[in-house]
Image: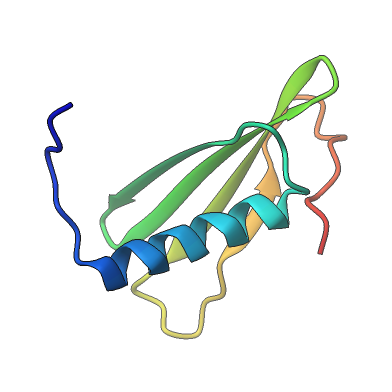
Length: 87
């Protein structure tokens, strides 16, 4: 196996901690999909979590150009009746 990127050991532990935090926030699902984009100062993260027979998709949006803005998390499923992740 060829490793395309080598990371300093400190950053790998931070990366694992961040992943653990995300997984914990969504109730430790068996799988989780995270897609991140950064465009015009806005950070947008799509998180797909299996639920029952389907998948719930959440969107986390942060406007990096507004210092007072807090990230917003919302379900973007069409029926919009999906629960928010556990606090």
